[in-house]
Amino acid sequence: MTSRRRFAVLAATATLLPMRFRSQAAAQEARDTPPTRGMAEVPSTGARRPGPVTLASVRVPAPETPEPQAVGFAPVEMQIESIGVDAPIEVGDIVDGAMANPSGPWVVAWYEPLGLMGEGENVVVSGHVDYWNTGPNNTAGPAVFWDVPDLQPGDIIRLLGADGQEFEYAVEWSRLYNVAAELTPEVIQEEIVGDTGRESLTLITCGGPFDPVTGEYLERWVLRANQV
Image 1 (cartoon, helix red, strand yellow):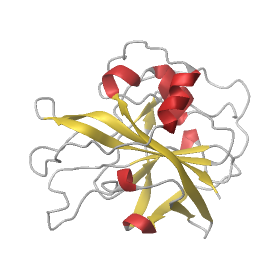
Image 2 (cartoon, rainbow, N blue to C red):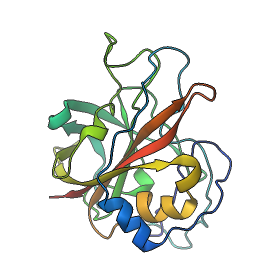
Image 3 (tube, one colour):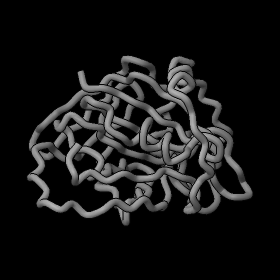
């Protein structure tokens, strides 16, 4: 990974989560366990809800040498035929090492500093599972990642570049992470947004029970796919 790559923190609040170490064996066991959707009834009215990522900062030193010119490609469109997704991709902001949420319910956010298509690294994106005035029973339709938890190993996700580049990724695994108990900085870096050693794609969205008091989902659904 080049010096230009930044690390970001995924969290439900801007406060630092308590440290909690997980062994490699436990992480592997979690991956091997078939995920369950486990999502509460999704509200389709009320205020705009927090998205899959919120601002939290991890700062890294500025590189001492000029960054090499990127050789990868920026994705501009995502297609997932098995669940009917055909969505534009916007560039997601990373401010002081913090990932920002997608700007709306039907757009996918891509975090350029974490990986470009074709660089053999981890391309990280996020999308809303729910949003103000959206939902499966609403005339506007559900948010872009509403059906992402239904994806199965082997399902294909396609990313398209502005100049006709096309990359296909096959789903490897997906699982829910409890925000309070599991999403430590170590887990986020090592299992979610960090380098995978190959051309990969990571999708992040909300999941699990919805807390009407805080207006937040208590878990995050993370899906990993690898280039085919």
